[in-house]
Structures are given as C-alpha cells and as structure tokens.
Image (cartoon, rainbow, N blue to C red; front, side, top):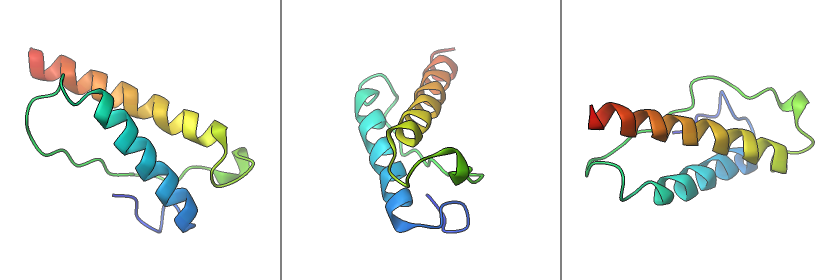
Length: 78
C-alpha cells in the first residue's frame, strides 16, 4: 500500500509499487507461501530526488525492500 499522504504523485506511487513487484519476484521462492502486505509508513523527502521516478529514489526503495525481505527470510527460518 502506498497512500497518497506519503507519496503525493501517482507517478511516485507507481514507481514504488513497481519496485515492490520486482524485488518480491526475486524472493518469491525463498519466502514461505503466504500473503504479504508491504505498507509505506512515512513519506520520502522528495527534495532529495530529482524527479518522482529518479534512479536515486528507485535505488533507495529497492534497498529498503531487500533489507525487509532478508529480515523476513531470517525470521521465518528461525
């Protein structure tokens, strides 16, 4: 879920969702079979990024998602 209050522009919300889909497909076989909800809990400071779809923003989102999925795998295997 990417609420409007945290990502004002639709193009930003869609870019974040595409990163979620891309990273989750990489971890699909490592994760247990279940439904997962990924929710944006705070806004990205858009003043740090050139545009709503900048590579810097995509990289930052992807990095956070990889950390989240790695943490989930570690917890599910314990």
